[in-house]
Length: 344
Image (cartoon, rainbow, N blue to C red; front, side):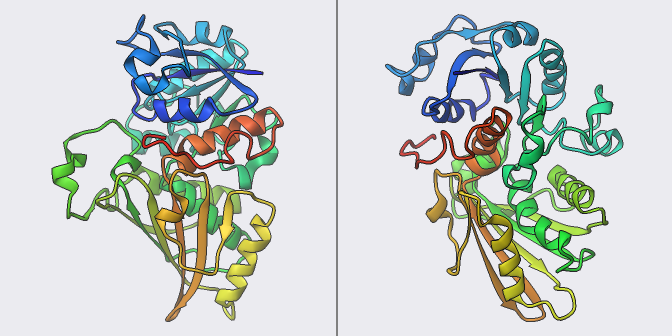
């Protein structure tokens, strides 16, 4: 069994991660560490875990957690996760990071968008980006894997094959994403309270969203060509889920069918990427690791539509796939089920 530790017990995504990992046939949760909860039992704080996981929260350092585990999954915010990750890897343990600390190709981009100095710059550009279907070849020997942001995950997955095959123009891509309130990848705050979200659609981070920079950097680095994207995320009145509408200008004489065939070719062996003929919906992927993708002609442009559950695909699902890749397990190990739990 793979002994796994979790850092960041106060993160609201942590419970969902525990519930999914308890179903993994090759993973054993060895320890969960976090501040302000040391000594409490997990099933006291989260009654959903009664008779499923009897384990205390620990308030221990990253290196001590590493000594108990084969791999550590971090829910810590940026900066904190970076410092912990360095300790964990130096202690000989592997590290799967849900923060943005290792997603970028160089320190200058990170420091511009996150406003603080990167203290491990030599690893940037060397750490695999955690989309299994695209970068799995580099997972097996990786000490660190950087999981993608929830907005970046479907965008990169849809666009990277098309850019690599020179099927689309890269100077005018428009990405419009509608996201449920639990897609924000952060702790709850007043702007996601029910009475603010009910009957309300609200754009946010227009021109300034950090995952905008992540998307451009990853696509440009993986395809060796500059990529320019206009990115507008919106909060919509649903709990979870994400719907991405991507408008692309095809290269000369490229049809929507060629776009579709390219995606089918890239993902035909992928369990969780479904290139579908119908128009996707978030309900069809709810509480799963699937992404449903469809392609449509739309005037002079071609439109790609993608539906995901952002808490899983672009969250815990990508982290589990990263662990599977690190340890040579099947991509769908621990993921090939539908959660029937309201928080999972």
